[in-house]
Image 1 (spheres, one colour):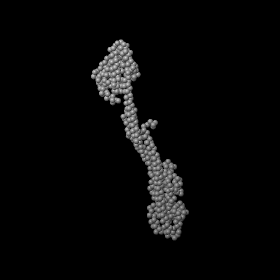
Image 2: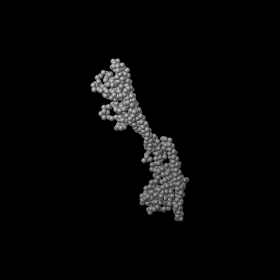
Image 3: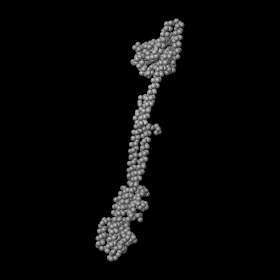
Length: 585
């Protein structure tokens, strides 16, 4: 079906489809690159945040450990752990950190040696059964850091703390005593470091104990304990460092992991992909709008380009249509692309050549027809001449000398006007004289078969007419109307000025003609072998050729009544008519 569309439609659609395809191809490639880059940036940003949290926590634990080690060293170097100086020194060290909750020292029997601040212990407390106590004694010289828990040493205190414990040898009452130093640190500081992290609106950070897989910290720990929320701990424990996608749930998550070296904890960052990849979604919407906008722009531009290309072609088509109708005056426009301009120029040259050839052919045909008509006018039907001379011989035999003279005189005048100087234009007076001489000859031949009459307007006799236009019509009246009739016929010739036209009428009361026979006469299908040989069609063509298609013959005929032939042509003088003849030639 596209073959039947206009070139403007084909160009517009083709350019638009091709451009949109290229735009879509580039958009898909760029979107893939941008999307991959956005995902890489999301991984990198998430990992950087988790690394920063891990670094902050590691630094915090390291500083706290340094404080613990300082106290441990001071206590170990003291002459008596229960001295007032030692206590003041420890209080001073604890005052440097607001998050230090308590510092206690127990001997290996579980007896309390140092208690800062001075708070009453729980009565039910059995220190030797606590995990941190046994772990410190079993791992001499190793600093143990517990998981976050509720402080359970003192009465009416339920703080959320992280405990640091380590075995120690001290001097007490002049003796070396083995024991365990315990420092509780408020967990809120660690909580605050984790809560400050922003991983989108729904993202968060939690911590795992690498050895046991227990959750050290979680912003929604209550939901975890209530089993209303679950974390894919196993997947996080498999990775020491890095980021990966967790699609085990309905909402895909991006998991970033970093290990805190000095505690054995893992910091796990959880980001939701629908938030992390928001940039990708925005890019997708932006690219869609861009593609639609570019497609519209391409469509408009391609329409303008196609219109500019097709407009001169349409003008060329209009010029061709005008030539098809016969109008060669509408030249093709030379606007548009170079190829269209060249085509229009070649077309205009071709039309000019065709126009010249047609004008040349018309002139040649007119000349040819004029020559043929002049040759036809010059010829004399031998049968007509033979009949006329035979009539003269009979009249001589019958001693009708006067009629012989009249007939020969009329014949000579007939020939003189017919042949006269080769001119095709004569005066109406000469044309009527020619018709009268013809009627005289025919009247001699047919005896009393018919009579005739002339009614001529004298003012018009000096005007010009084509030669030999009345006689063929009189001949037609005689041959087809009067001669076949049994009654005596009459031929009336009249000539009048009507406005700016000459009107000549030849009326006979012969047999008349049917429409079929009249059509044959007008087309030249019927030519009398007895006449001059100049037919009715010849008269019609000569009048129209010389004066124009609006002039010529008009027939009115009714069988058994007669026929009227009207000749109409413009009223011109000989000078005017000869000037028109030169112009036409």
